[in-house]
Length: 573
Image (cartoon, rainbow, N blue to C red):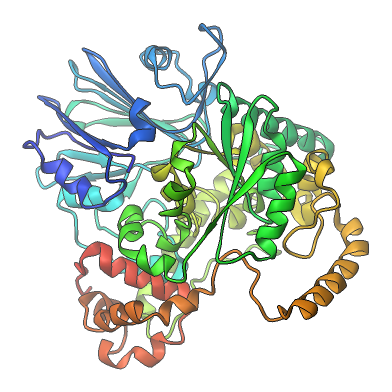
């Protein structure tokens, strides 16, 4: 587990560390504590993050994540991968330090000055690694990277029913809220300075997702996108003889694999339940780019068996099922690699996945027996945040309501989980890619126009290898229109010959099947007697089972996770 807890009030030895240990990560994670007149700082770092901490006589610098650090003009090189060393430390102390020009990717920077007690926290552009803030009963500041740990350390464990309903129905909490009253997320893309005691603080944004109109033509945006992605991958591989790539049967991870420079040996990894079409296509793509695919086959009870661990690993921020590789990461050796590359977020950022045809007020999905008054309050929160986004993005606020900050992404647990298990860099989270995503009009993103124009050269070696879905990554809309019918016929004939017409070829199981597992059914039965459910429903929990059975699988699973993580501390509102 790669996390920290800070209290501006000095705590007894082991107090904050005990809180972090309740949310287990890796068994070998090392716990370290510092205390002084300024308060107490605790870090919990696994082996792959042991160089995240730089402890000097007068201050501590902590850099979580696996960012690319660019320190131009400082020896020995302008590009350093995952640097946590003297150059970054010295730069952080400089008044001229500009994080937007130096640090790229998912990161969290903390710098604590022992003499003054001043604390600086720098959040990445999307809050890929979120930081949470609360005040304890004495008014002292508490900060940390795990929302439930911050709540416990601050004594703010009362759950807000509106936020809980928001999380269950929408699978995320509206920024900056968490499910705990009095615990909020710091703004992404900002430098946060806390004076000693946390009484006064300033927050200065260095990046915001504004509609800039920076590109005059789609071709210019495509050039910038391709160059940014390739440079991000190259920089993250610098100094590594081996790199891992999380490879699926899709196109985004294939583009990342294609961008790996020849100097680094790429090793591809995928998770699956069986040797499905997803695995077969991933293997073909790996071979096309000179990589070998290693497959982590998930047992039938993979998600159920890992529920308790992954639920606490993510806490109440994201769905536990999104830590797909838990356990498999060690078996496959992902935690031994100097860098693992992923292709997450290309769909949402570059293909208009969340862009509606018409802008309209947000309305939360109505679920049977979920209290209507809570959902009205949820809608009010979402629409207030939507209004604030319109100041940054007048024409695409509705799309970015589900993109920024990253805590608003319903499957953001993939990043939150993976970063705690191994060193990972998501190439589409690079600054240059985010800049293109923020500046390009929605119309350029639809039908993969921008994406395909930018990345087609990367797909050249695998132009004859289709997507696991019915498409060819190399081709655009028209090219696929001509080729997909033949692909569908071929797959149909092959499936008929192998008796696999009704076999599931998707990368993940049917989530409703988890709820049919006896272990999860037992958990759901216990939930019916909980105060949590009583606070959220408009009927007695004992009579709610037929209504809950009509809920989609993911809200039901998240409700179980919420009860497990909070210890059922919600109170009726």
